[in-house]
Length: 285
Image (cartoon, rainbow, N blue to C red):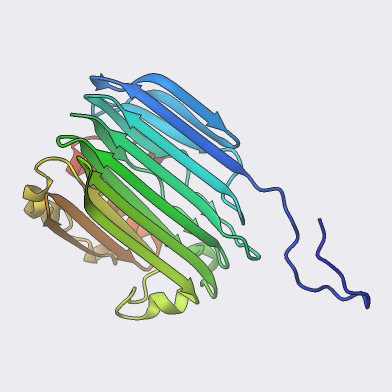
């Protein structure tokens, strides 16, 4: 379990071997209406809890990571399949912490499948990237022609309260969405190296230390562009840069902020108004 030591007694600097966490959740729900549990598999430190129906007439599922975060070399996966007409809101019990690594890369794999008329709101709380964290995250979605998927993900680069700047880290975030078997959305963010310095560049982050993306893939989402832009009015007063665009039948919102606090305020305000529903209870604690 210790680093290898040379005959002279000096450490070679090799990372020690560790037992890493492997967590998995696979959920299958029936419909129509608020999702009804058909099958649930849990492994490792990941658990799903169901506090009840959400305010939007949907079942609420809350992800719990009993490991307290993601450390070097951990592997976590979440899979959700919704049957025809099922409605579900997925969230997490707290911000997910991505801890520093001495070399190994952690992997997070999320996959959702939505049958005809199914609706999923993917609303986890923010992810916090620690200095020297190394993680690759992937989100895959397969949608029926009339299924509705709303995704929101926010990332804080460093712990704001400590004034932490990421001198070295790897963060790769890949999104791929297919509708009726056809790729309709692809996005990849990859920051490798002095992430704090990279984010300081005007063409990358403009000095931001937190970012968020909202993607609405519901039928008719593209027609809500003016509404989304109106809901973003006042972002500047919070110190957040935000913009919305729509194409190919979906709508996307991007947010950049100097800290996660004001970004979270804007995101909560936007999500409640845009969805015409309260946020999951865990967001309010």
